[in-house]
Amino acid sequence: MKYDYDLIVIGAGSGGVRSARIAASYGKKVAIFEGDTVGGTCVIRGCVPKKLLVYASSFIKTFKSAAAFGWDMGAPAFNWQKLIANKDQEIDRLNKIYLSLLKNSGVELISHFAQFIDKNSVSAGDKIYTAKRILIATGSTPFYPDITGIEHVISSNEALSLKQLPKQMTIMGAGYIAVEFACIFNALGVKVNLVYRGDKILRGFDQDVRNFAEEAYIKNGINIITESNVIEISKQKDRLNLLLDSDMQLKNQDVVLCATGRVANTSHLALNNLPVKIKYNGQIEVDAEQNCGPNSVFAVGDVCNSNNLTPVAIKEGHLLMDRLYGNGSIYPQYEYLPSTVFSQPEIASCGYTEEQAAEHFGELLIFKSQFRAMKYAMTEITDQTFMKLIVQKQTDLVVGCHIVGADAGEMIQGFAVAIKQGIRKGDLNQCIGIHPTSAEELVTMR
Image: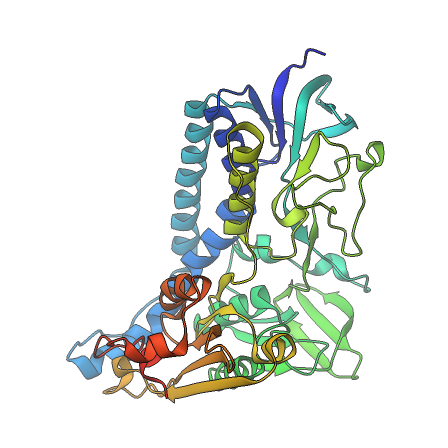
């Protein structure tokens, strides 16, 4: 049968764009469908704009430290509107780069949402398109709990483009998105409440990391309310009032940000026309080949993967195209994924938590260190850095590394390579550290 394309990609986020470009590089005729802005969540309304806001919010600590190092800074003034305008300009620049990448790769961009007709055809606009293979790369979207007044909340999408900096706000949730935005707004002078149903924030992270980070957030001024659910949100003039199931009330909030998780973005795909399986969390079930049922339909990224990390989507898509159209035989490896929470303080992790490692490996050796970074030594800032190594006792293999503190994300990347390659604690003991740095602590812990 003759098809319009060798490959149709649905979704022009990071995973979809990489997949389309790699397929095109193998000489395949490729079309990519996107009804929103090309670039996807990470570039347009996720990692990139959020990191720009993280940078903006971190300057206040620099200003506070400057006097101790001989600088007379005067009274700093912050302009939220200028930040957002400059952020928008940068995102527009990146969007244009993504468009150029597709064009220069020979990928046809069709600016419509696509939905399945069958395993080899989709409809978009008023046309039908066919392909030998179809890749779903539609990512994820914010989840909203079913509570009274939920229409009054915003998600992380809107938080990146607020017209005015709020004076006080409440954030629902306590995962990495919730704490990142809590730290951003708190550092910019907003009074922030963080409401979470569990007993401890950052579920899934190492317990020591959770404890250390929570103490730091509270010290920085974030009001953390655990074991509580928001059950009702009401609007009075231009303010929001929240009722919690603990009978507590949070009144006169300018903004309520819902960060209670994300769900696979599949509602517009008409997946009922395909024999695909949907997991309990709404994600598409795939096998090791990223295949989701019909042998012609594949999926990569957040739409099928619980890691919700842009580099994972990119890696899955790239390797899949190599296997389908090149001579590739490599599959993604998920065991030692590095990740960073861009909060204040920053959190970086690679490998197992202590709880996971104990269950998986048995007897462990645990190494911890806590110290005040040298950059704060002459200042009034008392922030601490925390580091933790988890070692399998029998083999001496390092199976987990966790860092909380300034530049944690920059430190973890190289260490993640070492862990993936099977570094042992004895190897670290033989390394010479770079002094004076925080990172040297990773090779000097005993």
